[in-house]
Structure formats: C-alpha cells, structure tokens
Length: 254
Image (cartoon, rainbow, N blue to C red; front, top):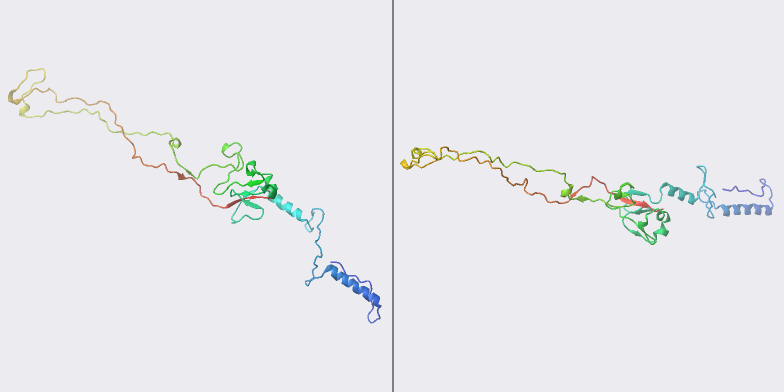
C-alpha cells in the first residue's frame, strides 16, 4: 500500500491558503481512488496484477500460474494409472472403462503423446477397459503380457485330461487259480468200484470211478475288466480368483 503524502502542511490555529488546502484535498482524493481501501483495511486491486517474469527461487516469492501447472504436471505425469474409491473421475483423470474420448488428441495432448497407437482412433482416444481386471507388470520376455494394456487370463477354469498329472489305476479282482476237488461221495453204493484200467464191477449198483477223487487243477490265467469309480464328476469350471478388493482404475490425462 502506498503512503499518502500531502504537498502542504499547516500549523494549528493559523490561516491557510485555500489553494494549498485544495491541493492537499486533491492528493487525498487521488490516493483513495487509486488504492480503494476496503472496510477491513485491505487493498482491493483495481486491475489484474501481473506476476514475476521468472520462476520463484525462495519460499516467500510470488509465482505464475504456469509455474504451478507445470509443477503439478511433473508430480503426476500424464499416463499414470492409479486406483481410487471415487465414484466419478476427479479433474485431470479419466476412468479406464472402455469409453471413447472424442477429440482426445486436442483435449489431452500430453496423454495422446504417451498412449499406445492401439488406443488412437483418428483424433479420438479409445480407453481400455480395466473393469474386473487385475493389473500386472509388463514383461518384454513374456508373450502373454509384453505390451501395454495387453489382456489375458480367465476368472474360471475347467480341468481337462491334459491338465492332470500322469497316473495309473490298479486293483486285484481275486486269485482264481486254486486247485480243488470234486468228491464222488462215499457209502455202500460206491463200495464196489475199481480204478480205470482194471476190471469193472457192476455189483451192488456200482460203477467204475477213477482211483483219485481229484478232478483237476483249475489254474488257468484269465482277466477281469473293472472300473475304479462310478463316473462321478461334471467337468464344470471353477473360480481361480484370489481374495480381492475392487476400486475404480483411472489414468492421468494431463
């Protein structure tokens, strides 16, 4: 605030030249009109002030808007991706929701300069859809995610034969090679018999029987086909999602 300086001064109780009094009055009027003193004693600007022509070098210096804008842009660069719990994208950010930003090249030139060509359609920016997806670090050596915004993976999976470890099923159905006998019986009706190769005796209703009561050893090898289960299972897909928490994904536009 400029200091008021009167051109003339007068001693108390003395006559004053009217011309000099007028000059002092004009000086006061000019000062008030120039400074426009407010009720709280602060000074209202009568015109838009201009800042310094160079960037500040100390904490108490004024600075220009452009300096502040540049500082903010340098702190969070265009193309930076972040999570937020906001329902709407804050100023300077865009949600990665698959939408198209019409005239994005002119609206957000800093973002246009760093996004992949696949996001550019004419002068529009086609944002990728990050909803329902985890982010992963790009790896140039892994084909599945060696490019910006490349997508892949699945929320569920169904196992097939090729996904199972090599294994076998075995079992035993029984040992069917035991020797066993067929006994022709005993008693008087079988008391009169002779071995094959000898004289036949038909007395008392007898017949000729082998000398041994063993008919043979049934030990022939053979197979039994069997299954180890009842065919349970459906092959339905199941979730492979780890525990998660959802937020909106956004990208810095400028």
